Amino acid sequence: MKTLLIFPKQSIQRLAALLLAGLFLSACQHQQLETKAELLVFGTLVQITTYTDSAPPAKHAIQKVEQRFQAFHHEWHAWEKGGIVSKMNQAIADRQPITVADSVKVFIIKSQKLAKQSDYLFDPGIGQLIEMWGFHSEHWQGPPPTEMQIQNWLKQRPSIADLYFEGNTLYSRNDRVRLDFGGNAKGLALDIAMQELRQAGIDNAVVNIGGDMRIIGRKNEQAWSIGIQNPQQPSQALAMLKLSGDESVVTSGTYQRYFEWQGQRFSHILNPNSGRPADHLVSVTVIHQDATTADAAATALLIAGPEHWRETASKMGIKQALVIDQQGKIEQTKAMAKRSKLLGTSMIPR
Image (cartoon, rainbow, N blue to C red; front, side, top):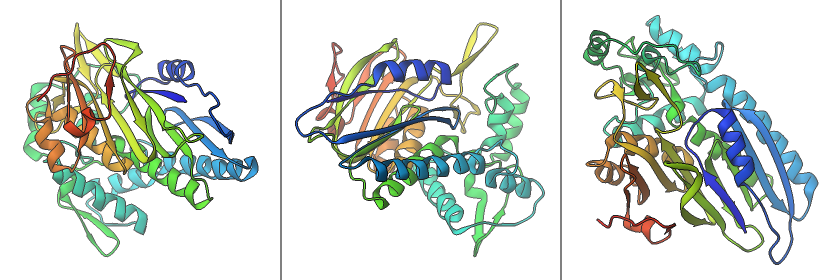
């Protein structure tokens, strides 16, 4: 049986320690060969594990995934000079069109659809707001933006909805749009990785990017056992899930990555409607076959907060979600409750 802990986006040092401590494998029934790789990319630890009858093809497939991840990080990091996102942002700022590849266009259109479904709680067009808060950097210096700066941004309200295509040429109606796909790029990377592994004939694998996972198949005829991290005691799991087949599980949280200024804590996840950090839910876990969708939805549900997360989940087609509020209370969708096992914690039925 395999046990994994799901962690929200956080510093690489803490993540590496937790994952390396929490990830273990044991043999059950028929033994397949485990092929495993670990690398640092996307500013976090990436783990790729496959189970096959022959190791060489698996190693070759993993190498291809690693190569694609390195290229992906350069192209899709919002603040990486020379990448496609940086080029698009510069073109938008210059009020110039830019021609992009089919794959880039497809991803932007998919992100626009997800943003619309979330009522733009998830919105990759708010890169300027992210930079204003200083959350584009791992080393936040402060201070937070002034009220006037936030209100000026809200008056313009740049959004991914401002983008449109003519053929493969991208235009923007608002020159203050700055793309930052931190809310779903890792999901896209997971989907790309699994596509690569499947094309290599691999049917049993897990790819883990900083706690966001996509899983295909099973391990020696047994489902994967996934632990959801307890925000109040990060070294422990508060719930367990069983995953198999083809599923993605993504967690967004406010309790691992944050900054403090004059005694006040600021989460790195921003609400585009207020221009301020989300601060009502501390963790949201979503299961969906498509990792890009799960990634975007986890962000949107966290921003939606205790009163509206169910409505947002419904609009985004999310049937399996678990949320934890500031008081440690847990709520789940009915579909999630059927497959999760809470560990010493009472669920709030609703």
